[in-house]
Length: 379
Image (cartoon, helix red, strand yellow):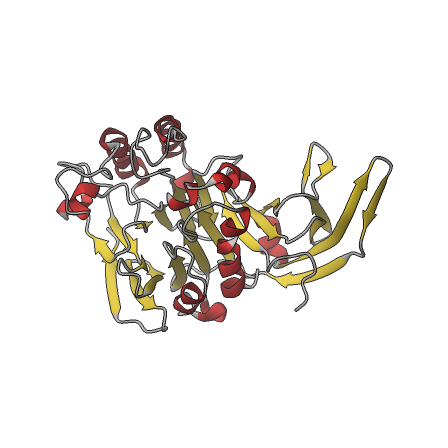
């Protein structure tokens, strides 16, 4: 299909109680979204933006869930003059949308740590097929680094291939996404909550706490050259986690499952996982212990979904690796959901089926084979 200025299909991303419909483009354009006769524009203080690489439209979930379809209108922009706009003919594209309405046999595809792999990630992510998939999670490090804005658009290309703009998506940042000059602009490229990459996200009967750890070494590490300030970022995030944990959002009517989502599995002591007594990856123990305490005591999650470690593993809440000390676990199993293998010979997605008492996780490789299955029981 000739999509005009659009790079690929939109991604309908869940953020809080909204969807952010993200429309990546390959040239300057004016873009709008229409849902049930209501038109949404990407603008800043009334000025429609034509120079963005990704046009983002925040719409109420209830509206799109009810109508179950939306359209995207795109018009090339050749020049913005003081008293004229030189533009092309408007093109309109229609998309169906299937919200998550089930409460059992919910199918989630989780992809992280593909590090630039596109075909492999799409093949591994095709386990459920678009017809049977309910939610796609792209959980960081989809590209290997962010030297150019074009590299940061890889999550949208994968989402387009797997969902066709028809299913809910959640996109998070990974630590490799923070490397390179384009990392400065990620809040303009990926959906977020008013620029913050930590937020809650409602998808049907699931309420997510989406956490963001930033980089995986201390701010003063030589790799960052003085460009990192993730410690104060984590302190701000701690206040956010305390605030939402004290709210009723995770126990509202209609919420059946409470999940935590983060690229970095902050419930795991990294020096244990990386096999080193002194590891540059073992950071922020006090902060991460605090996060685990708050989440265990007040959110009471059913599952923690993560990536980063390039493993196909589920750490039980009672495992040594899944605790930062006595009674400092997060209160649920921590699933390390695949990625590129450390020898770079394969890639695994995690395909999760959620039911009332637990979930089954099928790890599928780049050939579409599923050699490993793990079950996690909810408490």
